[in-house]
Image 1 (cartoon, helix red, strand yellow):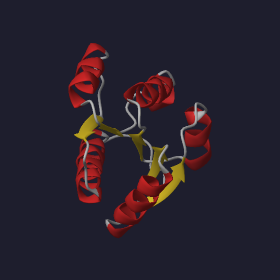
Image 2 (cartoon, one colour):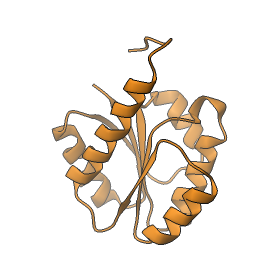
Image 3 (cartoon, one colour):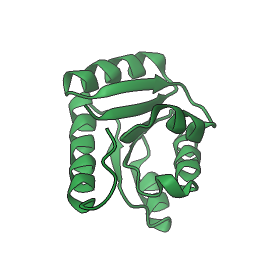
Image 4 (cartoon, helix red, strand yellow):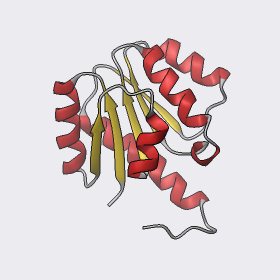
Length: 133
């Protein structure tokens, strides 16, 4: 069961999203906004990360922190943003890989689909090494 680290600074949304993703067959570890995202990732070993902060810059700083860690350069990330144009431009300047953007308002199904897509491509590209479980 793929494990998702959900970082959301709105508890109600985090809860709804957690239930929705569990319905779609994901294991979910949820956290509020936490600048120690790499520590969280080291602790929980997620297969993918969902960032949904009320301010895009917060998600962006977490994304940069993750990508700053060589182990997480291609960790799939889904970013939920209410300023998708800005987010898209920002991700393009980073030539970010393995990241999908979801505009608000969004549904749990949309997030699950984005995760499916990212995790699928990871599985197909990663034909060598690492049989972690």
